[in-house]
Image (cartoon, rainbow, N blue to C red; front, side, top):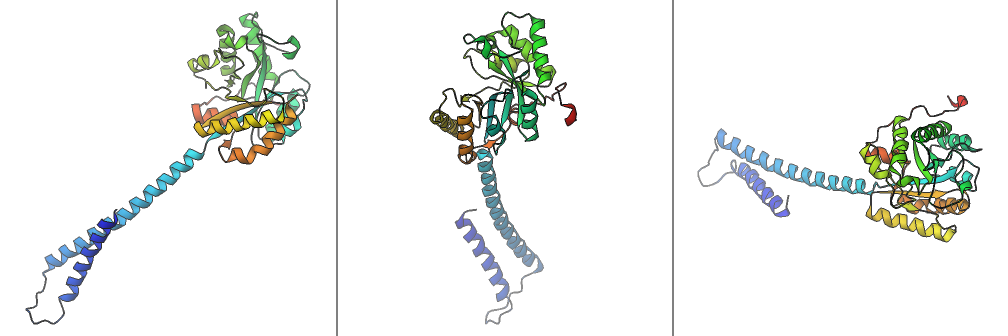
Length: 316
């Protein structure tokens, strides 16, 4: 309610009250005694005026509260940090697991510390996903690791490999690709990979190692979240580069509600873990740290529940 309207209401009320006071004061003029009907009318007018003033103030307060809540909601952006190449006791593993915020660890199957890293990450409250090796266009074969998906495999071979990988990584709730610039552009293979994931209640995160990846398109068609990587943190192995990429994450969040960013243990593991720990306060000013499962539930309404994933017997 505007100040002018409030002032006008106050004046009306004052005049009405003054009229009641004056009715019993002695005067030379003939005394006028208002009828019951008149008194009732005046009281109704006063009540209506008071109601408008109260409602006006309440509406103003409610509007301010709604704006504050909207502003708070707008500030509740999400950043999901995924750390690849876990499962082989690589540099930075311990430091990543000890980060004071929630992250997602992508654990490669069939490696010496696969189950150890996945289990510890889960116990610390981090998300765990399968980091599935896939054939790239270029790169050394030994970089792939065991259980890799290759372009010359049959449908049955692909299905068997993906199923085995899911069962080898405890507490897995999703999957992403390790390398895979060749396979992620193959509709036949990726359709099988996504089908197996969905059957097990897992979603798939496209790491975007290939600009022509078919994963988001296929995922959307299958009713799965088309989630993908937005920014690589450590595609160059220096602390300065990781810090620059974290600055890009902050810039991204200024324009977008969510950001998925991928780093690694290994060659850049110590740089990545150190830069992330230092950047936690700055990133918290822009977004909430979430696991990748929190993001797909919130953004795409994903309701998949992991089944048949391995849980160590001593943890059951």
